[in-house]
Image (cartoon, rainbow, N blue to C red):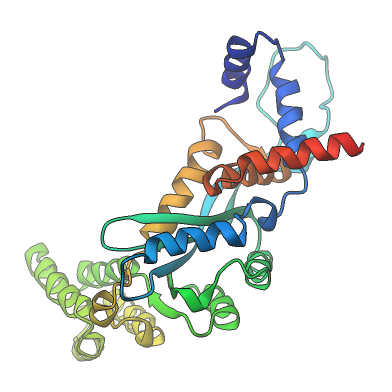
Length: 320
C-alpha cells in the first residue's frame, strides 16, 4: 500500500507514530541489496512442494518457467536535485520527464489439472543480461531439481528470451505463447478481408488448426493467400515469419496431451500482482533503485520468504 496509508495503519496497530518518510527509509533499508537468492525459497522448501504435488501421480509434475516484462513508471535520478526558487512557493509542474521502463521478470510454478503452486518469482527494472544472470544464479544454486519435474518454458517470440532459455535449460519443453499468435492472425484478417464476418470465419478456422498443432497447414494457407493490399502483404509476411521461426514450439496438441500449458497466464498474473498493483498507482513515479527494492520485497512476500528477509535485516543491524 502507499506509505501514507501504511503510516496510518502502523500507528493504529502499534501506537507508535512514524512519519511516512521515516517509514519509507526503514522499508528501503530492509530491502537494500536484495538479490534473487535472498528472496527465493530454499532448496528444501521447493523440493517439499514438488513432492507434495507428485504424491499419488504416475508422471512427474510439470514445472513452468514464464519470462516476460511489465512496464512501470520511473523518474530520473536528476529529479532528486533541489530546484531553484523559494522553498515554500506554490507547487509547479516538475521539470523532469518520467519514463516507462520494462520490469523484466520470471516465475517458476507447478501446475496440474486443478491448481497452480507458486514457487519463485523475481522482477526488477533490468536489462536482458541482468535477467539472464538472475536465472543463472537460480540454476547454479540448484534450486530447481530438474530431474524431479518436467520443465516447460512458455514465452512470447522475443529472441532474447529464447537465447537465455536455450543456454540455461536446453532440455526444457519450449512452448510459444498461443495468445500472441492470435494477435498476429487477427491483424492479418483485419487488413485482408473487407467483411468482418469473413475475417472472423478465417481467424476461427486458422486458430483451430493452430490449436490442434497443425502449424504446417497454417503456414501453407498464409503462403497461398493473395494479399488484398500492400498492408495485407506485410501483415501476412510478418505472421508467416513469426510462426516459421517458432515452428518447433507450436505443436500445441502434443503439449496439451502431455499436460503442458500453451499460454503465459502464470507470468502475466505475476506481473499484475507483483509489479502493477504496487508500482502503477495514480501519480506514482519511482526512482529505479526504490522501485527495484519494493519489487524485491513483493517477490519475497509471494515467495514466502518475507520473514527471512527481515531477519536478515535484523542481523545486519546487530552486526552494525
